[in-house]
Image 1 (cartoon, rainbow, N blue to C red):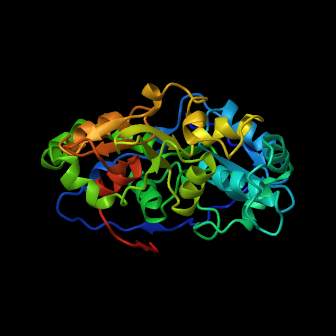
Image 2 (cartoon, one colour; image 1 turned 135 degrees about the horizontal axis):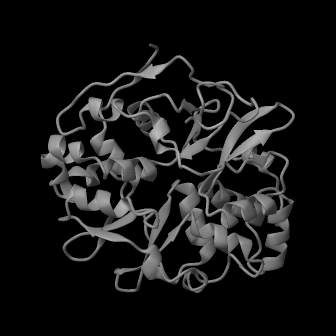
Length: 344
């Protein structure tokens, strides 16, 4: 049975449109995902936590942390519609925004700014402040229907570079039922026997050949850098994760945008502290740092990224040096056909 329909809130941004597909060598046959609806990805029991645009940032932060969420939709009561998605990536920008606001007029904050002052400035922010940030987002509020094919949803995630895709019910198109993450779609693909049947050669290709060309050049930071420097790099480069290296250049840890949920919620966190000190306040790095080798197969990467705890894989070359950060989005880009959207 389809879930009951919540109160009407938003019409589809792209209702009536479909994304075309074209096949190229070493990509997934479109029919594999065309045969499955997005509805199959909805959890049996679930809820969508919604944030009001006028919500103080401290409450939005608490919602991200308490629900273990990476993205939450933002509802504008004045407009009576969803207007945005608040993500951990945005939280990095908000933390820096609040920190710099202490000095006023966009000037860098004083080195001795108290952690409590930064926390107070953060708590004064509202979700509406997101609109003051220059973020590379598509215009409008993109949604897909539970009746759309998984291929359509996957291509929307890929072509619009979305961190998540809001999913609505076609029977009442203003509802919001789920936020689809790339890793959820990848986890579903990992369970399909036909994926290995049709794409055995691609799945057996090494990560270095099949995935690294789709990954950005790695950005890294030294463990003795400040937390402020690391967050600045995450924000400026629009990164989801930043490998942290020791003095010898070997991988020491990883700072991800998800980690900022915990750091920002701690009133004692001072952005001027060494990054290594900040990392010690996070869960053990064995549970946060997931790696792969350039010689590992694409199938191995898919299996590891299908684990909800693995937000990304730090790819190491034969010498143990960091050569890329592999995400579920990069793997989907390797598997999916490449084509622009068209009106159907």
